[in-house]
Length: 160
Image (tube, rainbow, N blue to C red):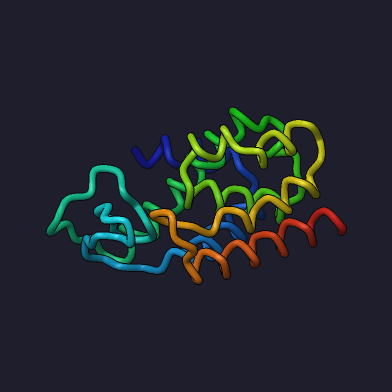
């Protein structure tokens, strides 16, 4: 499994990973014991939900490794529906991957944001990020703050 992770990691740039992992981890927060998130989904570490059961616990090192693997996987999966993503500036890649990690690949790939990115209108794609600030149908301050930061990062990369 370590070899597969190293190979997958090699598919994304070191600059992207160095920026994306702490950015996403900072927004997700670290919780080593399984808990139910704001909409009742069992979650652990930095927002991991797949296969999480009540009572699950992980070390910080396990959570850090899981986050890196998941960031690589989300970037790869998002690039399948947004083929230009890997060629975008690092800030755009980080912002879009952070958003996709939070909302899920399915929702991300069906979004207006993806349509704009696929049409080559990166600035319009960045400007879609603040629309994604709800959980369970309610505006969530933390999501609003996260989307503002993702949008700023995305737009700064476009303007650079």
